Length: 72
Image (cartoon, rainbow, N blue to C red; front, side, top):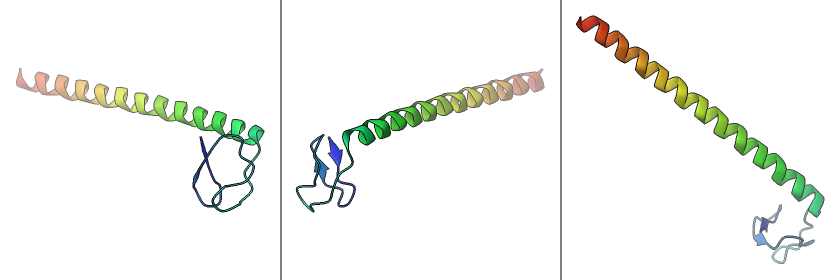
């Protein structure tokens, strides 16, 4: 499913004109390219989130080690 680029209503894939506003829709090649780009961005965001989680875990581990050293 896709959304109209003018009014935002949900459209079937391959629709050339919006059934709600009549606006012309991008062709299937452009939609395919945009979906690939969106998937690439989604993957990059997931990678960044994973890196941030690892960094936070390392900070917690370092903090816990420092706390343990201060107790002794």
